[in-house]
Amino acid sequence: MINCKTMKIKSFKDLEIYQLSVVLAKVIYKLTEKLPREEKFIIRDQFIRAVTSIGANIAEGFGRDTTKEFIKFLYNSRGSLMEVEHFLNLSIELNYFKSEEIKEIENRCDVLGIKINNLIRSLKQRSITS
Image (cartoon, rainbow, N blue to C red; front, side, top):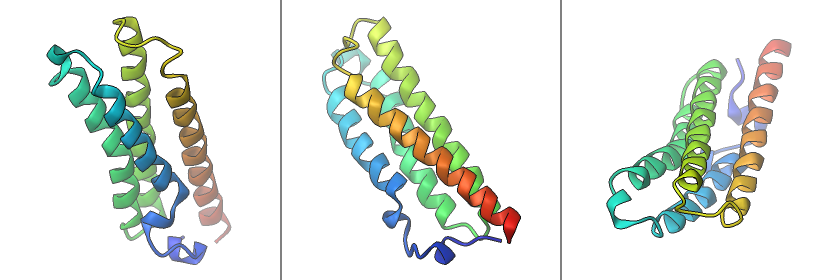
């Protein structure tokens, strides 16, 4: 079994993907303030639940006993990231934002997704070779 401690990481807060998830959450919080008032408890609420779930799953997975469990939570985190991307797309389709406005956010999502995938791949490889 692989433990993150073998990777010299003492806390989930040390993981780059966790740090990126916090930055993304802050950006989404700010972006969704611009949504129409009637969307406060509809799209905004879903946006916030999805984006905060990314970091929460990373933290919870890190705290689990096995690499297999950590990987499972990383998949959950990646799924939440896809939800954020869905709500970005939906917001464009509903004309709440222009695609140019959220290009940087989409880039952040792409980078975070790649890094989550890379960690999953790395953890799987380490567990195979151990």
